[in-house]
Length: 322
Image (tube, rainbow, N blue to C red; front, side):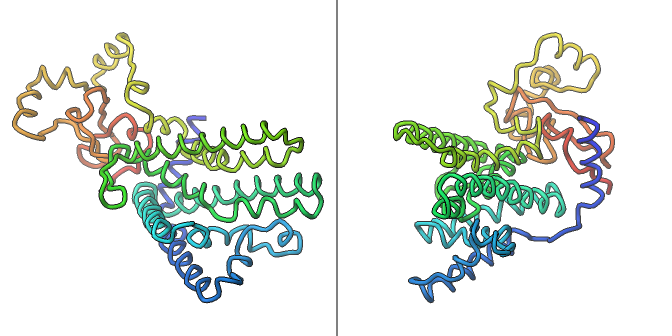
């Protein structure tokens, strides 16, 4: 599995510039166009009807619905201002991922999120049609009419790449990306549990409503597929950093790990007192032994120059050759 992931990373690195550049910019512009066209005729939103996921329409050959529903995300939000802010934020997340991954991998990540959501929606539509007839065939389309959970996976991905990056919520409240990821995952799990309890309380005897709970889980599964063990970067530090004494001794003896204790013994405490003069700084996320004392740092032998990386990015980064 490790060898397969390594080969996949090399493939994406060699072809990083292929694909649609600024994909999230085009999706954002498409959302804005559809939103304003819908305002021209709010009583009969034809664009939403023709672009949304609809199981009955797919059966009649309208295959574009499998890929066009991300364009109505803004039109389906209850607050236009909040919709514009979240759309801009997802564009920023896409920009971060494209710089980190390259164009091809970002394109494939977003496409896989859409395809997996499509598969879940098709499954829900078929089961609903079998259980409720024509009345249930549109159930999947009505309840996943936009790509909210696919966009949520962009937040998780960006938070994994830059967990300690500080953003301003509503341009005012400073929060770290990993905190937003925790809130997003917590809220998603809360909604799943809440819906499950409602179905149980109402004694729903058919399967299709329960299958709706798969939709957010599919987006999370797509995120885990692309990140693997690196997804641990958004976990709290007290869960992630628990090295044993034996592993520390072995790593320090090999000269591959640097810890805050070593920095203090070598005079790092004096440099910290003068300011942010960190000895070890991750090239990707910018974390240092001063901001994260329990973090491990290593140097990549395949990168040009003296490039330092934290333990979250040493195994999964694009090698710098110039």
